[in-house]
Length: 513
Ligand code: UN1
Image (cartoon, rainbow, N blue to C red; front, side, top):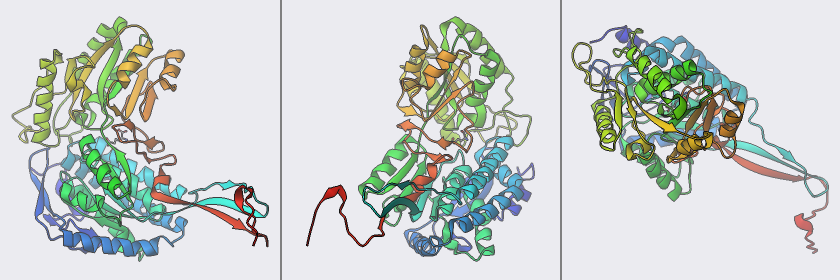
């Protein structure tokens, strides 16, 4: 079962058969039941990670809150230096970590490496940011007064992440939060707990080498009940959660009930509009990678192609032809394009979605199905499918985390396509393929795409870390990663200083004593 150097990778990452799943740096004390992690690649047991009990959680929160009182006073550029060293460690361990991501999650090794690269990139970004974190200065209406704003560290940031990006999403949050002076408590997906321990091992070493409190980075493990410990905890001012809309609504309500902040990055139902002026070759690459990359398990995966009727048959043929070239199999084998789904529950959802689509009147263009036999023993490998459908189908309205691409048609002008693209509850990523400037600008205008990400002549997935990442509507409204996404990890303070011997009141109010 163990092939492609997995054993060696596990060793380099300091992973054992049974791992502590609750820790503040090197201080390990998980005492709950062990969560077993099976690889979707070959079905083998990778290892076990202990879950976090409420007593364990208390220890974590004590370590985190006390680390915060120290960390918030370390100058931001010095905090950046810690993140720089973390990025260096990631460069050293890129291959084993990328391999573990591929083996535990099922995405291709190339994509596993890409995910670690995103971690490295966000570290670089955060290091630069650590000398910025700018506030504005304003002009006071009163003479001899100065007014400005500054950003201060917020406190303990709770991070709940999903299986599909088992390491990068944590890093997008932590790299920023750390330079902002926050400490982090992370609950990774219970489907990819080994990735969580691997990351914790890496950062624990950096903290130790720098004599920094280990509570700066904490790990907790378990199911939603462990997540709930954080969402209801007033010691956690910000909860950043990535996952399903269903999960996000539960998290948002729990956090809002105590007036905490949440940063939500939830489901997408991303479409590419293909206009009569599209470059068909580019469209095929963007659409096929978007739909089958990570086996359709990115929140930015392409789920819908909205094609103009005049080129519908041509695009349909080109895309279905491309699907014939796809090789499905072990994602660690670089000859394969498509790996397995995360588990057999995901396989069932994929099958159910295809049945639903047919029931609602969709016609199957490229047939799906579960693969069996040699190399497919885990039962998690499925064939990427294409269905001709309508945007109004219930199943098309939902995000199915699997490689199912719906072909939709539009007639008339680009407004009709935009209406379909926006006609879903999700609002994460969107794209238009066109060489027509008017169509492209219309798509990007206030009356265009309603998504957090809108691309021209690029697919829906593969966003760079430099931009703010996230989306609108039921995607949750949060923004992570680049641009000014850091602001959510800090508290803003407005300061007014009077350097005169008078005390003039604002708004011209007179109050003489
Ligand atoms: C996710 O699927 O949760 O844009 C994140 C992309 C990646 C991130 C996806 N950079 O596809």
